[in-house]
Length: 114
Image (tube, rainbow, N blue to C red):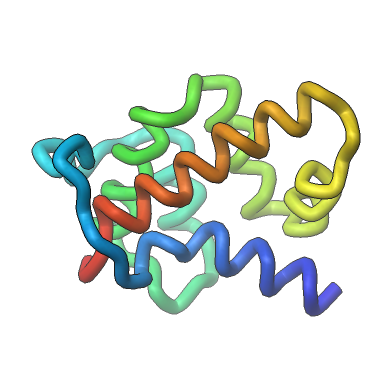
């Protein structure tokens, strides 16, 4: 369970880490509202703040569909689900994890320092 929590924490708080930006990192929109920002703001993570959660939502808006965002929000509620999806052999889960990984990379790029 500890490993699962670490994987989820790393993935969801990746926006707090360092990283270089790219020319298409959509820095114009750094704050948004939606299901991801709500889950982030309601979480017990110490690094959360409205600016960071809004920025993570903006990254989600770029990389994830609405249904992907709702699916990802469940990771906040059940960290084990993220591990199950990551390790799944189902094509649907593999495709989702690719989009989710792109989201994590974008959030890291957009939200560094918030």
